Image (cartoon, rainbow, N blue to C red; front, side, top):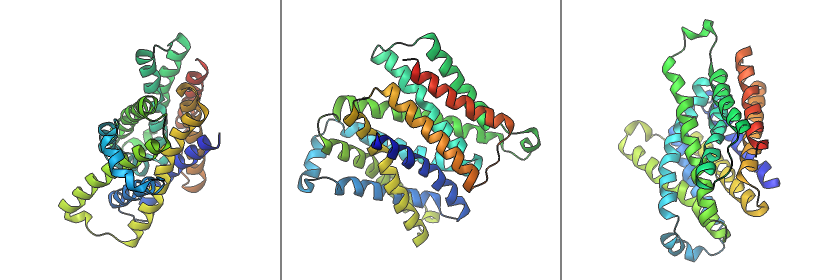
Length: 291
């Protein structure tokens, strides 16, 4: 289970890094673009047969799917960063990880897995947990831009699609060969890098790149690659069902990120927010053990 633990640590570190970017005045978008270059190169460097990389990618049945994920990744990553900075790392992680309900619903329709009453309760609690986690006290509402509530919703929906689509590709294309896992992950990130690079080239306010952005992006890229790579390896090496892996992974990330936010960034949680976090963890556990 070491791979699952590593995926949890990496995923939590992503949200905490996003929050630290604001504190240390790091240009988030530039750091994210550097991150994707780093993550893509990391995947390519891990391949045992580097001379066959391009040939393997061009003929891979997952190429289009990885490219689509690359477009979604960079879009959602920026929204996740904004959510962590404006609403807190814990809110971003909860919105991201409560998207667990989407792979569960997909498994019901696509794999004919059961969707009983208990699991439906878990899904309902998921939505309630997210709402309570991001709810602001009345004293803060007048200083709070209500439009920001759309940020965790977008993270929730986008993350749900990503989790579901990655599991779909793992089932259909990534079980046989470790090289496919490495190149699939690297292709996602490299596609995101190309899109981000084009934005930098066409927008002059992004062209100033300091060593701070480079270092932050490299660190984020290594961690980002690990979060996806270790998750796919958990499925491949241990053969665990997604309804077990996703809940354990998501509970771990929510708890670890929330605890770190309290200790490192001194994020403030109202009683309602704490109830929301507790309900979120409870919902994930219910969905996990209702299978």
